[in-house]
Image (cartoon, rainbow, N blue to C red; front, side, top):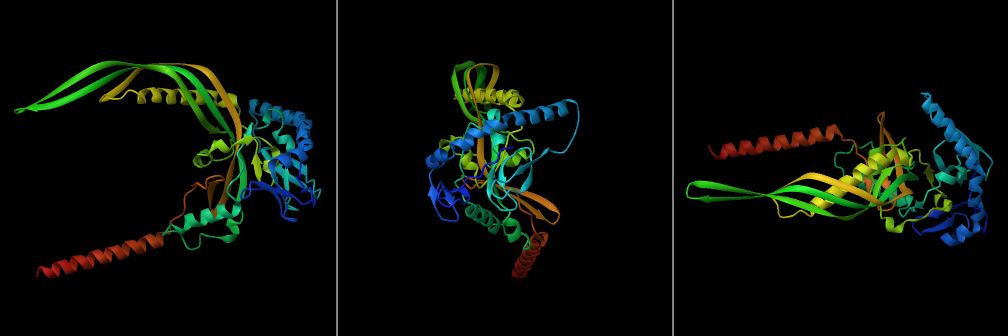
Length: 364
């Protein structure tokens, strides 16, 4: 397994992508480098990705054969050597970038994202870790019934930036729909009410373009969480470069396009049908009787998106939180202090009782 440590050209310290500056920064000599400089300096490192492609394919084939044979096993563990300190570190098979647990240097596992597993695009982090923590603290601060012992500095410090894999699909279709449209008119003459129903044959058709329909490409994480942090502004997406992963964790996809094609096509057809139905205005009711479509163009993009993740343990409960690494949108629910709720209920009940008593005295 190839491992890459992006080092500062000036002092040799570890480089990390800085979301605030949108540059690669060194914490030792405080140097900053733009994307073009780093990609040119480490072009040779990225070319080494292909050297481990065969090993990756063999591991994938072994896992596939085990699944076909009905074998069940824990997620495959993989050992790599940190290029900075030489320590042996164990990761899961889907981890593509991480931190060395011993020297804390960022390490990108090149072989994990090579060949067919190399992403098409990456959306760099824009939200720094400090701002992500500030977002989470602000979210907690707005909750009046949050237990006092919930917030823990030790747990919040475990917040981690992770690039998660997604599939994005764009399609251009020829779509046609035939519907029954009804216009209902009601009026009253004298003591009688009249209703007139006119029925129309409504036809719509044309080219439909649907963009940025997405689905997560990782089985081992909560689907609602990974989809709940959307939307992302994909106008800022960049062609994939491993250098963007430095300083963050990253996951390799384990859901292939073939596994999603039927589901995604159904969603595309529903969107196309809805777009045509939205043009059928002026009717009281619309009932689609027939729909047909033909896909002219289809584009799939394997994309890495930035997410800050915090797995919070509170009273034997595991509570996952995710923060969009671009916009700051937060996903996750907070616990409620039942004592605070009951106290508020008691206060309201006492106030209602007092008001009722005072109202009764006024009528005496």
